[in-house]
Amino acid sequence: MVRTGVANLPLHGGTAPKWLFKRMVKLSEGIIEVIIHEYGKDEFLKRISDPFWFQSLSCVLGFDWHSSGCTTVTCGALKEAIKPEEYGLAIAGGKGKASRKTIQQIDEIGEIFNFTDSKIRELQYSSRMSAKVDNTAIQDGYNLYHHVFLFTENGKWAVIQQGMNSDIKYARRYHWLSGFDSFIIDPHNSIIGEKVDNVLNMVSRDSISSQKTCVDLVCEHPRHLVNDWVSLTRLKTQTTLDECNGSNNHSKHVICLDMPRSINWNKMREIYDFQPKNYEELLSLKGVGSKTVRALALISDLIYGDKPSWNDPVKYTFTVGGKDGLPYPVDRKSMDESTEFIKQGINQSKIGDKEKLKAFKRLKIFCNN
Image 1 (cartoon, rainbow, N blue to C red):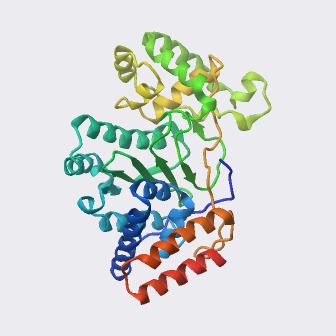
Image 2: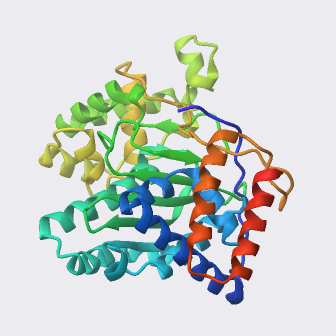
Image 3: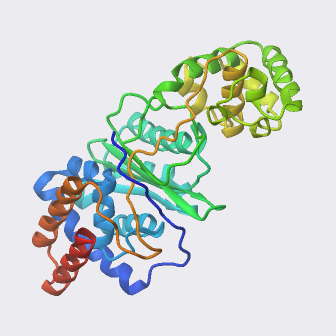
């Protein structure tokens, strides 16, 4: 996947005005109806997983193009506009407290779609694992506060979720689309955000050897982990890990103080009793959080030499102007394809000519600046 620039999604407080949100719901319903009728539900999921298309749609609906709110408000409008019984498509979850209702809503909508219990559990697992990966296996400084799970009556699904870095006041958006090979090997369709240094990415293809070592570590008796952890804590007298191994490339390692202060040894004993078969099974266990993942990764690296990836997995980005400025053009071909697709939806949607004209003007501004 080619990286195309730098994306800034500044955190903006407040809520969308009611008059704007109502129009966003109406317009999004018109566009969705056309897309599903002309191209099908699977194509809609594919498009919503494309950051260019999502950004274009958000702007057409009338939201500030690059703020963090474009994710939450656009998804909120889509959720209100989409009627599962009518479109064979549904959205579960949302921002904050609403995100914690995702599992329950998948169950309720699954009944509408006449899913089997096993299919509902499969979708619920996909929702949980996508969140677990972005909140725990990828440690980029962004904590998830928004999670929506889109799925069709055919069982295809997509996830749009967003994390917040409260220190720098920016957000990062993660796009998922079903059909990938593994939750633990480069599973994302795209990630949009500002690239940062030293991100622990345990779902990178470059982390496979570290994943295997982590599983081996927890499947051995916890006393071995205790000994390994004691060996690492002795390094705290060193300024950096690089001084311990003689390396001058500090950017590829972490500072000792970056290590978790402690390990939940009771949880480690539970994991040992469970004996996970692979890294996905380990990651999926309740109670396996970022500290556990990081501790195992450090032991794997510093004691056994199996290094995880420390490269930020950001794949898609935009270049921005001022705080509420207009975007600087990036991948013109992708943008053109996305906006042309939306133009067709606006043209054929069952909305008034005045609303269509306003939508076209917003799309034109987004494309031509």
